[in-house]
Length: 337
Image (tube, rainbow, N blue to C red; front, side):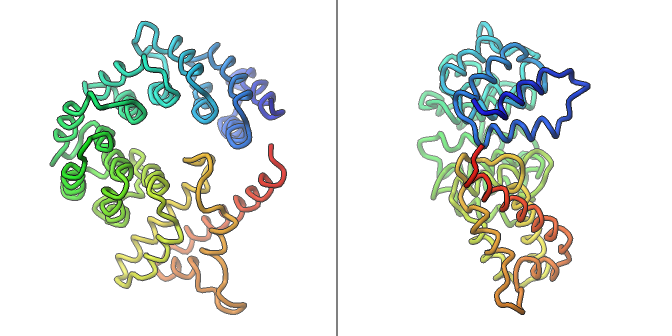
C-alpha cells in the first residue's frame, strides 16, 4: 500500500470540520494516479464503514479504476440491500457497481433508467447500462430514445444507450437532428456521449456537434463539456487534430467559438482526473504542439490564435496549467507514487 493511501485514510479519520475538499481531492487523485488494487481495497474497508457520507464518495473513482466484482458486491450489499438503492447512497454507485461487474444491479438500472427518477439516479442508471448486456432491452431502449426526439428537456442520459442498439444508424441521425434543432444545451450530454460510443457511425455527427454553436458542447450546465472531452477519447480525436481543424476556419465568429471550445476542453484535460487510465496525447507532446514557437522569433501558436479572437486571457490560463501538468507528468513518469 502506498504511503499516500495511509495518509488519505488518516485524513478521512479527521472530523469534517478539520477537512478541506481541495486537500481531499488532491490525496484521492494521487492514489488514483499511482495506486493499485491493494490501495483500493484498503480504502474500500474505510468506505464501507461510512457509505452514506458525502466525503467518502470521493473514493469511488479509485474503486472504478482498481476494483473488481468483489468490490461491486460489497458496495451493492450496503448501498442496495434487497435490490433497492438506499436514499442516502450516492447515485454514482449504480454505474460503479455495473462497471465492476455485479449482475444483481441490472434490474435496478433498468427501473431507474426507464421510469421517472431523480436526475442523478436516472443518469447513473443509464450510464450503468452501458456496462451490461442489453440485448434483451432493445425495444425499451429504442422507445425511450425515440421519446426524446424533438423535445427540449428529457431524461438526459437515455440517448447514450443508442450504442447498445443492434442497428443504431437511423437513431443516430434522428438524435443529431433533434440535438441540433430542439434539445436544450443543458440536456445534451447524453446525446454527445452516445454519438461518441457508436464508433465510425457516430463520429461524423460528434465532430459536427463539437464545434456547432447549436450544441454548446463546452457548456458547464449539466456536464456537456465533460462528455465532449470523454467523446474525444472514445473516438480517438486528438487535440492536435482539432487544433489543426480550427486553424483552417476563417469566419471571425466561427473561429472565436471554436477556439473557446478548444480552450474549455483543454481545461478538462488538465483537471484533477483523467477520463481514461492511460489517456492519449501526453503533455510532453501536446504542450509544444499547442504552445511551442515555430522559430526563435515567431511564436504563431494557440496563444496568438486566442489573441486574434479576444480569448488571450483564457489561453494564458490554460497554458500555465498545461505547463504545470507537464512538469507533474515528467515527475510521475520517473518517480511514480
